[in-house]
Length: 226
Image (cartoon, rainbow, N blue to C red; front, side):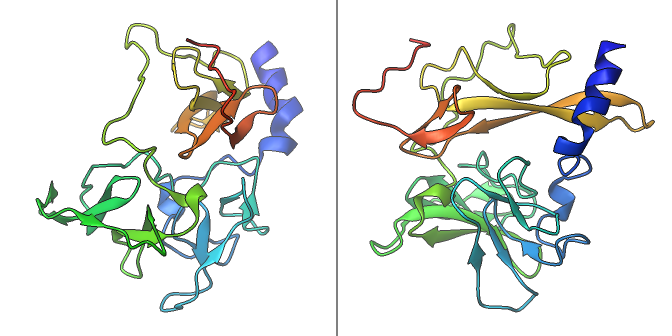
């Protein structure tokens, strides 16, 4: 009963989250009318050479407003570091390097992003293929600086949303970069449930549980999980 009430109470605030998935990534959104090509970037049409960026802390979503801060990005690419997916042309090896994907495998020829655009990001091209691109916007970096996912929680102690909705820090992550987003959803039979997505804050940022967002890491910051 409490779970059902929570869905009704929060339906308006989280309506944009429901129904979004990576299916909307790299295609024209039926609500936004634009093409999200990364977590924070979009194009107005296929073949358009101009790439538009969302404001800081906002994600590209399939919504009439295009960029929202309290929603999941339709292109969830930040955790594809050092991995070649079936539709990958190239991928980021770390925060500033990339490599070509050959038949789903990493090539041995690792390349560096140029100084003017030092950060490696990921975008979908006009053929819905995933490619590494270099950018000068640090918030679009695809890796946190390492070639592996750091501080993954013990598989025996996974974070569970239960009946909670919102953003929650990973209390096991010693870097204080990982957080979870719990939101109303439906299963394949239309039954209400709460789903979970996990995120890593970009390089040089940490998750602030008080303001529920990634903030710039200062020299005085000490992760409370340590």
